[in-house]
Image (cartoon, rainbow, N blue to C red; front, side, top):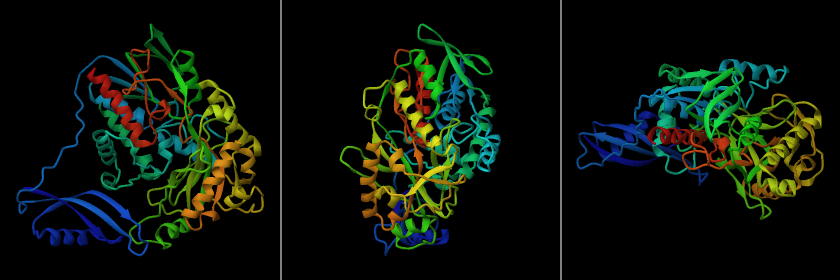
Amino acid sequence: MGYKTITLKLPTDYSSEFLRNKISKELRLKEFDFQIENKSLDARKKSNIFWLVKVVVSSPEIKNGETIAQNVLSIPYKKSNKNIVVVGSGPAGFFNAFTLQSAGFNVTLIERGSEVKKRSQSILTFERGGTFDPQNNYAFGEGGAGTFSDGKLTSRSKRISKEKHFILSNYVEAGAPEEIMYMAHPHLGTDNLRKIVKNLRFGFENLGGKILFETLLEDVVLVNKKVKEVLTSRGTLPADALFIAPGHSAYETYKMLIKNGVPFRTKNFAIGSRMEHRQEIINNAQWGHSKLPGVKAAEYRVTSAADGKHQVFSFCMCPGGTVVPAAAYENTNIVNGMSYYQRNGKFANAACVAGIHPDELAGKTVSPIDALANLQKLEEAFFNYSNNYTAPACSIRDFLNQKSKNTNLESSFPLGLTPAPLWEMLPQPVVNAMQAGLVDFERKMRGFETGNLLGFESKTSSPIQVIRDQSGLVEGFENLYMIGEGSGYAGGIISSAADGIKAAMHFVER
């Protein structure tokens, strides 16, 4: 059996039969199998948009073929009686716990929110006019914040190819579409993710792992900088090692860790608002067509040097998606975006944020605790503007002109909009940078000025970062690890999950 890798240009609506015939003609083969290795859309010329598909072909007719490299993560099995506690069931926490349990440790994973079915019901009740649930919302609950997102599986992190393959393979086994193994910009959609996180949980439990939902980490018992026990809202757990994957919103967890001497520092982060356009506007800007056969919806990623001091960029773009009320705590108001696998909603949304340092926001040098407090004040201010969870909003044109003219805004946001002068509500350096950035975006994408800006986007990254080594081990501690987005070293599903795996492998192999 020989192997050959080829790259083909294919129409956007090609069929499996078309691809097979193309391979046969290209390599002059009759008997062969093939596997897609990479698939990306080339839309640089709107008059000629096509899929670029890289395939690995295997056939007894191929002589002197290529050697196919294996990309498998090998988890050594070391049966152990050590009790490991993992906090947080997002990508970092789950894959950390799954890896450790696969290696033979006794792992207990605790999650402050509920399992995904109950969590979904709480969110639905809230969006239909019910009360906000501080335990189950877009930030807390099974699967973490990523469960209710677009489910993007891209990552700019380097040297995580084995970890990434392991993550994607487990997602496919849990019900994800196989295309995530090869798409250049794979995504799952929140509808798939809600099924996947449940199936991943079953797999973890079948290995002997234990999950405790509705269990909040309250404190840790330390002896000479070594964790001995974990104090939770449901009792005490012994811990030979503690891995904390709090995500970006667990303020009380950060405060508890700082109280116990865990070292943190402030860092640059980004805040702003969420942009929303009709999806057909984005399709026309990117493709020159309102629809493209074989492609769901157009995406975009834009950046700008803006005012020369603060980079402005889009983040977490959700084609055909929905803007959602993503508050983690009562009487705070923030927004985020999500979409379903088909990406067939009427609107497209993405964060528009400016990079900034907590010291600049405060006008002085601040501690990690102060940085969190200042961010929370902003989140509360957006709630106080209307004293509810509607999204303060304005058109992009009004934001640039700093005048409220268009108050009849259409949106996917489920709780409704409150017309608001966002240019007065956001910090002035952020406003100045966003205005310069939006002007730049309008030059790059036709029709961009027709969009709206919604609410406060504050969760692109954390304003603080734990001091740890590459394995996740916290400086000065023997058995305490901080991982994932909440550590300040990762962001997004893949890089967070890989960070959790790397920390687990470090513990297994040391």
